[in-house]
Length: 192
Image 1: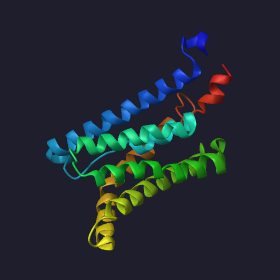
Image 2: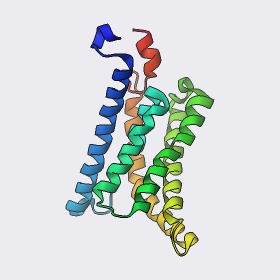
Image 3: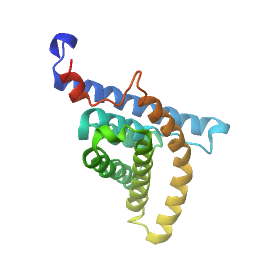
């Protein structure tokens, strides 16, 4: 590995995760800017942190969750949130993504989830897990938990629905045979 890139395996891994994190963070800021600056984007907020996190976790295992956490923090910062509960809800939502990651990647197997009929449910379940966790945690300190949870859930489902559709397209493109981004990097580098 070092002979090919001049980097150790560990350095290469964190550079790759860093690049994916920068992409997630930049898109969070760009999407927030577009949704607040242009009339045609007012009702749509496109977030790609979940799908980019799934790609990072497929490539590097659980360390890829860093991408989701940084993307969540970027979403709160871009929104100029001064509410610590929002930060906590978004970070907890990102961490909750570990549940479907563990189930799909480690119980079902990375080789099997690359198939489209498993890959799409993997993404959808990840979105649902993140959204429900964000709403649950965000509503914990509300005066009326159930009412606040349902309101937040309705809002998040509407807000994230277009993100999910675009994320499905991104994941399908990322999983193509040619130029495949969904590669177990440990095995890939070992085979070099």
